[in-house]
Length: 239
Image (cartoon, rainbow, N blue to C red):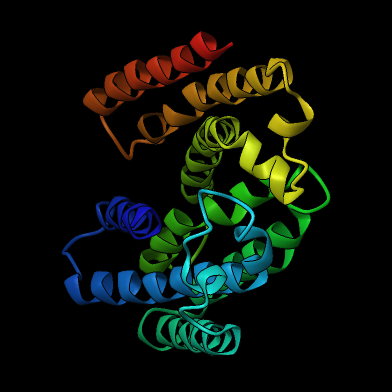
């Protein structure tokens, strides 16, 4: 849902810079993006089925409980991925399909295995997670300009305090599964809090850029500033 929502917002921002509104293109973009996102999620479940069984948060997923076989899940994930990328390539454009392919590859083949060896996986995982609004933008414009990178930056910096908060709440689960998350390596929470504050602080100026670029107006600027400071305040409160 988050992936589809942010892709849709990227689309609407780009569409707002042009006359008319292409509803069918929006539907095709969201549908293809949803398939690609689902594929990444399914393939992640396939690769992490053993460690999922060790964590309370994920132990009831279909693969650890045996409700679905790994082979069936793998086939399902591959079909979703191929269908989603093909849909984007044919019904939207090749650039959007390419970005979708990079998102799947980064999430499944870089982020997922890296979780077992390094706390940097959280940062790496935020990269494919921030690509959906770029896909929405490229679906309209056929290019990736500075505005698309601003949207990428907003979602990238927002994700980090969010992910670290989840990792703190689930740190015992991650430790049981053998994941060297920052919150596992930092039991006092000092480094975790520092990173949350740094990323939250970086989000504030980046989130104001749509107004600076003329994509949004004063109302957005004030709203983004207030909400960004509240979000940063939550990180400070955690620290």
